Length: 219
Image 1 (cartoon, rainbow, N blue to C red):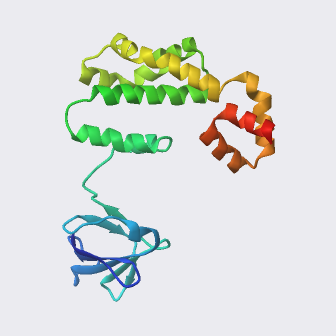
Image 2 (cartoon, one colour; image 1 turned 120 degrees about the vertical axis):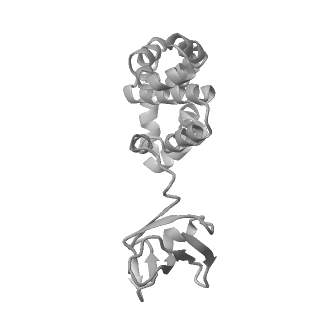
Image 3 (cartoon, rainbow, N blue to C red; image 1 turned 135 degrees about the vertical axis):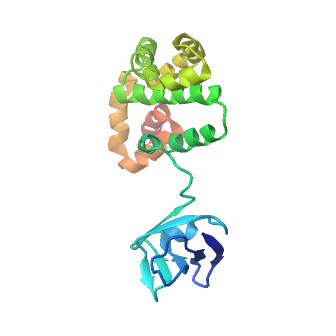
């Protein structure tokens, strides 16, 4: 447990720890110094932390930096491994799912938002952008992943489809405009060839593909 947390003169985060599981049976109080990336963590007194494989100095000083050790803050907050796996594609989803679960009642707005988000991602993966294709992806693939949520919210597939329908056409139009408009393939390649890849992606996000084409023509 963290008993005190301060910054030292080197702008490192220094934790005073009371151990519940001692590395050394003769020592139950430690000083943990967080350097490099780890010094930016937000840790308060009375919080629990788990420390793994630190660099140990003088038996009671633990060093964690970019090369040594790992610290887990608030290890009592558990996120299922399936949620962590989903974070590999979308980092926000694992945390949001856990937060809304903590606060009790199933949340319909979050559920519909998650469905829309999943549908959008799946359409991009498959490169299918027509309204009929989007509805088919929802019915054949997406909704089957949310059986438990449907039960918790007392909703049917038809209820979800009714809620989802206002989003389908805007999704289709957006994807056709920015991701799947075949008529702009030549112009897309022209833009990609004109700019370095990282610059191209940044400008595309800022201005959109159509404005990118206009920009190249002006140049």
